[in-house]
Image (cartoon, rainbow, N blue to C red; front, side, top):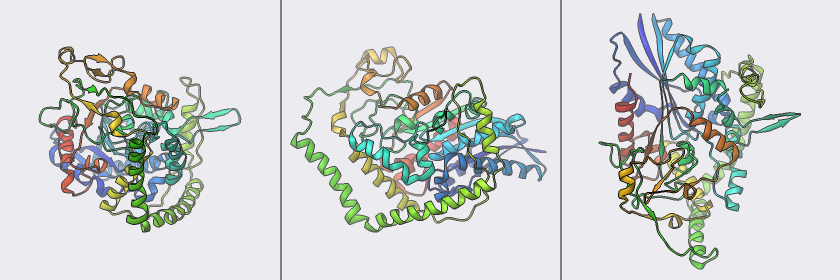
Length: 475
């Protein structure tokens, strides 16, 4: 009987399985099992493509878990057997993977199958709230969730509800609770790894993809790291940072600009002018498309989810209730009356390049919404012999950042909400291999990270994938 190590790849929001082509190809080509009797098989999921990703992390997690079970079962009919399992999520796909794991754990999937690697690339584990303190940031955090429907409310942690005397946690906070099935499933994996962009990935920026309450790269406004002195993993310079080594830099001493200085107003005016120009002159048809398509997709989603509820076998309800009665937590959890959905119709997706442009356009809005410019966070390099001698890693729990040989915690603290801080704390109790990535040749770093499609500016993504298949994904 042929033994199989099943590797499942899950794409992100609005995506399709072709986004995982390069990653799948490299794993299949370069990761050779040590046992001759074992075969590595890579499977790209396809049950949540396009706008189906807006139906909710939980609903898509159930779809993915069903597809995983069906895929594993299909090999047993061919005289083979899945004995090992690895799961890799990209962007939103990483959260969908974590939900799917909870269902698989609850259903006993891992009783006979060994979980090996759990990996995420650019995944917003802490949600996608804009951490800025400005009024525009707060307005954005209020409006943006509606664009992504059910998934949006979960990503912005607005899915918290109070019914009677019960208070229901936001889904992402619940998934990070040690008492949950999702957390217990992660504990089973031999290896847990994440890759995060340090700059130019504002939607899944540093704090959420790296799961940190500190941001030494000021990733929400920083567009270049030329002023930093960083050390890289040998052979992967200058793309993958060696996070066990200190960062050397010093904040530039300068007089803080007046709150309403002409220069500051001119800068903010310029930023907003670019956004308005994009809307009015560059993409008017796209703006109309977004409005009408959003309404159309919401209607379709409503129909899908009603069908999802009618066909329910109570599996999601069982999962919620099984966790809620655990004495390790004091909170109760929402009961979702939705289950398996067989709707797998092909839905038209954005073309790859159009999606890249859309993401960069959204990034420009993020940039406009931030109350501070990159200039406010500019750093100059200093040679700190003390930092090098002490070899202090950055972002340790009690010694976060080495700044000119001294610890500087407050300078880089991200403005997280209480639920987000709870997620960071519990998530980091698990052992993770974490790799900061710096992509310089394109601002579409989110797509470039896994070389999502053929683009000459995505070359650095190939280096990231090569590091992953060579040094992380041991089989």
